[in-house]
Image (cartoon, rainbow, N blue to C red; front, side, top):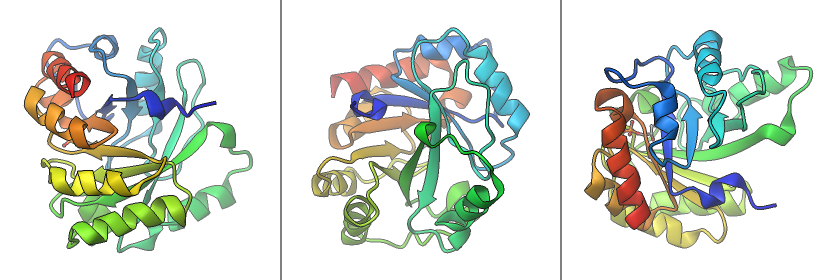
Length: 233
Ligand code: 1GP
């Protein structure tokens, strides 16, 4: 069976630590035309905040994944499609390469492996919370990024490679070069997508674009515009 994400052009990432824009509801998000929802943020993501958003999505038909920051908790299944576990390839703190994962596997009796997938992150905005948190080495040129993407797929067997420019729009040439080196892994791009044009531009060079802050800062209609951009690309 093909992996769910192979069909995704556009994903909306909801930060459980941030409020929605005025008047927006969680169910509105699924109606934007986005292909999937990811619940995840870098800081203050609590079990109860994630569970209450999952509860709000009980009737949505698109996939809903949880991207845990630290110990994945087992959530109730009604709406949950699965877990996406980040591995930060260029983290300076090895907690984010295998440390947290090791602790999680060691301390959890039964892990639902059939619902659990990994994402090979390459963090590229040094000013982002995720870069600071993971002590990522963002001083990478295009060849460095391409090599990380290639090793993610060929050495680590990753099916998702995620170029994370969180908070800023990345360089489309770097994104294109990373996608070119992948044979079947899916290239996710996230960071700074804020309108039709930025979504279109990045969706041209990535397999899947991820929109995060825009949802919280500008709301549903702005997200809809990015869905149109990604779809047209
Ligand atoms: C964050 O890649 C996502 O993990 C999206 O980034 O918040 O900048 O849209 P933005």
